[in-house]
Image 1 (cartoon, one colour):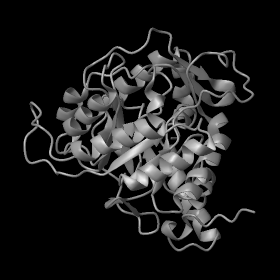
Image 2 (cartoon, one colour):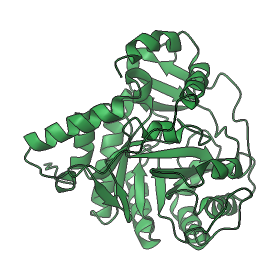
Image 3 (cartoon, helix red, strand yellow):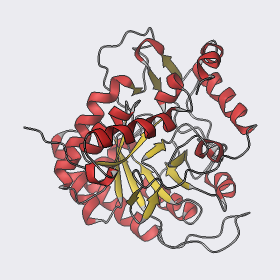
Image 4 (cartoon, rainbow, N blue to C red):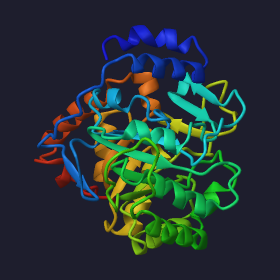
Length: 356
């Protein structure tokens, strides 16, 4: 963390995607980190998994499951790799990732560029620490539900949980799966698919039959959509909701890249993501665990989401501006704030926000 201010100008001298690939290459040179130990104050159980602390790395940073072991060593309680598709795909044409430094934000239209689920599954074999796999569909998919079902089956047993990503704005038609009829059909198929999947070349050993499945939703939802998603997710026994992905909305921004097409992430997303979290807390009535993402960069941000109903939080864009030590810093700040507000454990603070 202390060295990052020295490294950051070098990274910012490159375009955003080249800097990201250089970061991945550098992290691959580091030895695997030791996963975080359970903190008696911060540990939380979600969907039967014991998270040692609530701060996770969101999908998009480690798309191909290359450096999740190193990232776990920086204090993250869990890492989510992906988004992974059934078949490798190059993603959208470049440039497709833009750093909005003046706003501590990013805009991306990457389009699920990755090397495919089978390649990632081999790297995930027998990992230590909590690692989830974010699953998407190929851009040219002719049967989206079948594609998702195949992805869930393929990654069953090699990740600790699976996230079904129906909320990226960069794959045409993907967000249509958030509509009630399509979502119900999708989640019914996924419930069937998350049994024991077929063997994957190079992966040995037995596979757990029922990994928890999380659903990642967009922040750009109307009240009726929120209510429908909450109802269907509960009815279909989804284990948690991740609120939220990047946004197509554009609050006031200062960067020259503010008008680029794609999903907005980072600090400007904070208010919108918090509002959607509150909406889903109200819609679910606390019956479904919530994971907060979008604009989280401090212990105060994390506690605000926890009090609004989140059990876990995820970071990505904030790392670009604050460095990989941010997870540990947020955990330390969070413990201090919990003590100041009289909470013995993080779980005591979940959903305690009082709003008129």
